[in-house]
Image (cartoon, rainbow, N blue to C red; front, side):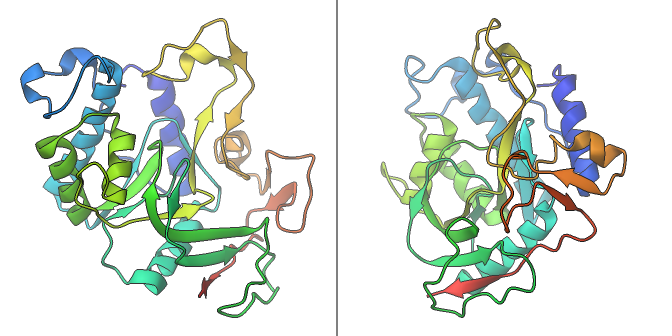
Length: 290
């Protein structure tokens, strides 16, 4: 939302540190929605106004992708967070996709909540560089240090996702021109699965996800512009599913310090040290699993 300058400042700073330039699109308020512009099937008693406004904001982002004919765009919500090695992770994600399916994909979900899909994976080990990965077809996977890339048929939340122009056209057609009867993330999940009368599109996702969400320490009322959280509820700083969170390390990064820290500082395992030196860290490559 335009008035949430706190979120704009933080995301701009985090993106700049990571080498990304943000093109901002303003959020949508319920008062901005014209009833005549709502898609067929939308029941206001089942989908509350702020959730409908969220849908419209994501549709605006897709319109922007189509209007500019971007080959691929990374769409981030304003509370998104990511690992310090995101650029390397994205490169490895793209390599995994190419190995699995070539370049004919529409939606690349860098984040996903609960997800399911086919067992066609690109495994990316996070063992230290220099450790030879198992050969293709091997079942000798490192249980706690593996990321998979797979054809997704279910998901929730939209902290961050990449979409091609072709994919944006398909999603906009389905979720705006066709029909909408639930929150946008659930509707997109149906589109990936070909459920509820949707024409199935190809959606590919990593697990664990690459994009998470961040909550600043303090009152829960500041967390969301969709939900009205209790102002009396307080929580510690949170970065969901990130090990070396960019936002949790923001002060070290701004100060150009080399050492960055895992948010699980009490754990020290071979594939996830408490502290890493940014210049020394090399994100490992993945391999195809048959």
